[in-house]
Length: 65
Image (cartoon, rainbow, N blue to C red; front, side, top):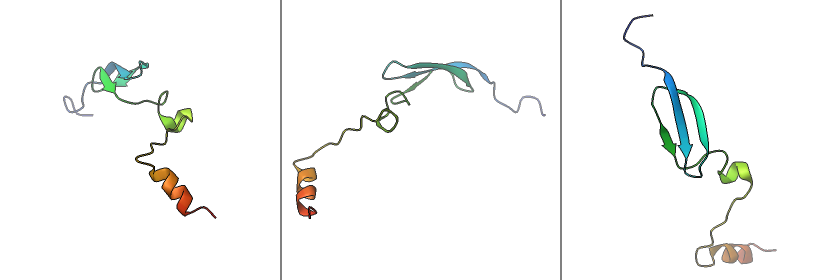
């Protein structure tokens, strides 16, 4: 391997907006993310459906058989 070509791979902390902290290694240090697997609706099963001005009800009413 060539010298001085590869970035420095050091320990870092990834912090989510929900408060989850993950210690890992990366080329960047102290990353802050908005969403992680602890708070993402796909992984938690707590998916929220936003109803903007009754659009969901309108859709259900239209396609109800």
